[in-house]
Length: 346
Length: 266
Image (cartoon, rainbow over all chains, first blue to last red; front, side):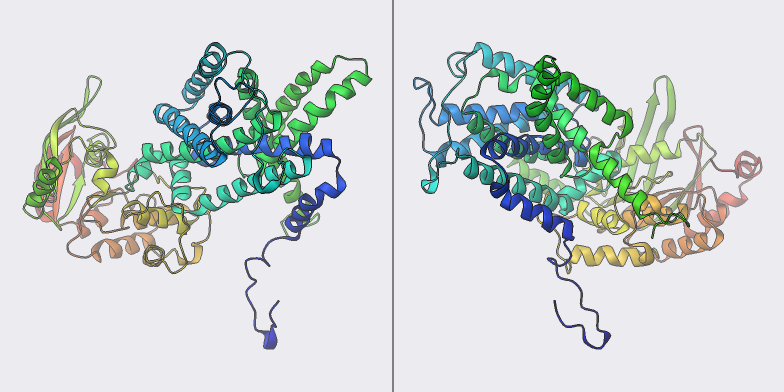
């Protein structure tokens, strides 16, 4: 804090402008390993950050670009498969065993290329047709991976896919994995926030609001949409690599249609308007998936019914808050800020 | 080699030609000809008004020129270069600009971001992932444009929250971004108050001499005050061309257009 002598107003620095709530959440996330057990760190938070990252790539496309793509989970899956194929796994006759500094960038690059190609096809369509074409390519990849034994090892997939022992740390230990996934999630989140205000991000939002006008301002609308797919693919690819490390395996089921739909549900339930939405959605999804089977079992119901709960939750959100949990939160805050007597915002 | 040829072609064409040359432009919507066989030449720096009743094909003509859609037949040359099959953004990058009859703006972005986007669209770095710095030249240019259309007080407001008149002003700021050489104004005065109309006329007449424009306008006061030449359209065809005085005093025009109460716009 600088001295504000003689009534001189000192503009707050960038750090001072960050609201207190953010500091609290940030500090909580940093000290989480002191508060939570290994299961919560690895299974709940690790999975939340991973699914959040993959859903974040959809939020970037849908929220800023107005393109609802169902390919993001498949892009993540391509990155995961490449990690297993180029790196090492239990399937030694297929995996190439390349060093980490080769297979990690290569997996991200190949997945990004794949996502960009799908994008180049999908951007020529609008709305429901974008959903259909990406879903079609996603299911084609699922069946291809399931039936191809030469590269994708068919139905079995790959097991024993673990992160490299960088800096002498076993990154699958819960605390290390927690910080690894947290770091990637925060980086992805900040990158999306930053790019949203860069010329490309602004132009992408312009394309979303009014593609015809963007062309009349000199922008190549198609090229902007395709590049958006490329950037989103990088996020999904990082999520895919973390996912294969967390499960230590990847198989066609990882990229199956139910998971593809789950990513859409996570992004919509969380909210597509702000990059924090996908992480909120992912936390809700992971909590439901992790704990409802036990709760249901306690009531004498089959644990498999958690899907029914997720579906009902999705319906409720879509009915009552089309902009997700984030929208609910914003409306609640706006109501609190209203003066109860005068009605106007304070 | 082909690239060098293309550049040579373009260089040869620059400056030699007219700002805009339309040859036999026809646009069919199904069996309906919205415009048929329109041939029109606009010199660099020329200010021309296009008049005509509703359905005369004025906006369709604009849409063909900017590339919002391709004409069914005919050729379009922009500053000597054949742009008939160019996408809209390529024509804009060659100095063409337009405004829309119904404001087409980015409601979810601020006034500053709208104008900044317009400046960015006709310069390099359209795909830049680096945020603009405060002192950036394009930002400064955007600020100038905002001042020029009197939107300084609302520069940080979301465009969706602006009044109708302010949105029309913003339309004009977007069209002035970069280095325009030929601007198409589609009913810029529609719905403006008398004061705002006076502002508009001041902006249009104050444009640098090398910037030509074509204006579609139902308000004769505005149209005839800013234009040097007038083109009358009727049923998708060019009906008459001349100076504002000639058109005003032409008995045929008076009978067809000025006399029959077509002043109303829509």
